[in-house]
Image (cartoon, rainbow, N blue to C red):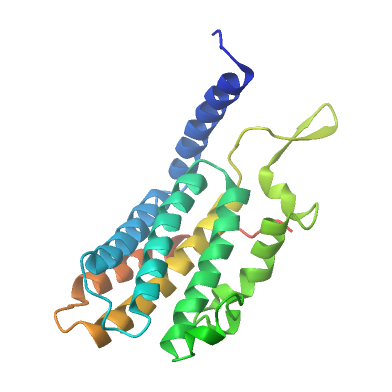
Length: 229
């Protein structure tokens, strides 16, 4: 195949390897594809309830709305990166999601927004165990160590180790998926509490059912892999 530029060649090759990773990743464990589907549906359902709602009468309502939209956008980008094998890039955004969830919890506790401006959210405000992995994802975002960069993937050829240019399947993908799901579950917890408190018409039954399905699916594949450090 002839290419008009090196960039075109790279993008074509990247797309080819991403598709292969998607196939290998989603077919490796029978529940993997289901978990991706369920957490995507959970986040979409929660976010779409906010769509068209008037948040101006709620204290810091517009800020809440921006944060919810930002979480949803990043969630689906992470899913795409994760399925395509771009773990470093997905991990960088997962770190952002952890900080966003921390900010939502800070605001819900009644902390004055003026005291939060330009300050990194306090990770102690996360409700779940995903906060334990924040330092790992900070290392990814900061390119802080050679070890964490192994998430790029490597290949041994003729007794030499090479970093792969394009995504290739590795079991670390499942660890990142677990943490992506964990963020989704904390987002669900925050949203249900916020919506119940502020919108009488909100019925959490559908979202709760989605959460239970997603959580049970996660449990079926949990601890099958460990983050390579």
